[in-house]
Image (cartoon, rainbow, N blue to C red; front, side, top):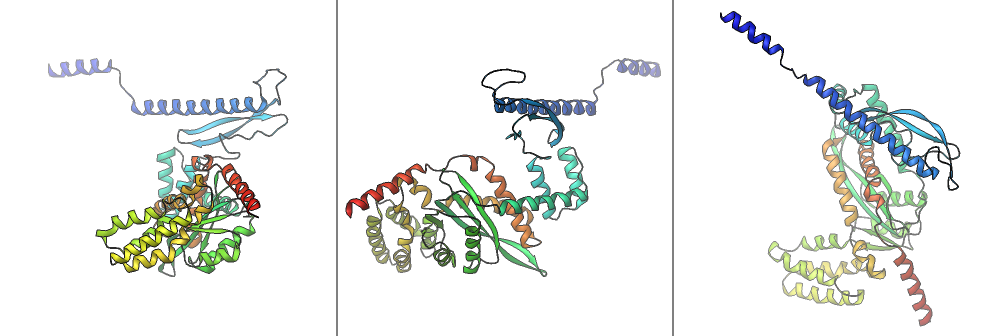
Length: 410
């Protein structure tokens, strides 16, 4: 009786719809892949229409170019491998802002592969990770070739000619760890960021310096000058060892602004915690003055107050270094908030440090440089590099006003 009942139940279960999870996942993955493929191809067609100033097969007087078919190529994305139909134009070469020419993988994939390799992840493990994350298996040869090609691209990007004039340049360095003869030593990476005449920021240079000393900074600044850095009116940086002397030698006509925030930290280093808040308010009052002359007067008052508070070492630091932090008063008031500190550089350095923390200790200085450069190259291509940072028309107007005042006084 029980056997008969069991057979009947099994027969009824066979009529129930069974869910094949694997097939559903494959189906959903295919839907996502096809949607990505269709969307990218639609975007490419729309961009071709914009370049031709007309849609496909449309005949108008405003048309500037025509279609000449397309060619196919593969692109690896998180949704899987997609096939793109890249439009061809009859007169001009089709350069798309959507996907870089000759690009075969997403840049995030390439950067992740390089990070895993530098972090000491085994090649077998890299193969497993890439297959799990992106649905494609990367071989040992591919990892090696990918890193070699990436190093070449980054090195070419690092050494490209500096064409634009950069009135404002930010300088800073960061120390990373590398192994050397079984020991762990520091390696310095020096970075320069410029604000061009169009008001946009750009990575001007990144190079390895054995130390953040005069020799390291002099070589770095000469390298920038050799590549075409010109027209710089103001350098903004911390008071690094040897940097000020190097700037005077390599760019004698440029002015130097000591980072206001770093100056504060230098003063705070000799101030007790209980008096930190009061001293901070006093220092901020100096840089809240309307011009450099009033700021210097205020600095003298602040130094006298610090002496009365029995903070003679802090008073000495204020008297000694305050003038170095007031150079920004010689530039337009609209720019002063951005040029009186090195904060734009500090944010980028934090990002490099966050990325390098994954690796820990680099096998050599070049590996540290390449990873830092890869990150800067990525940042330059984001909203950071495509958003106007300053209105540089104000600097030109400011210089004209100064010339008129000088002519009138003469």
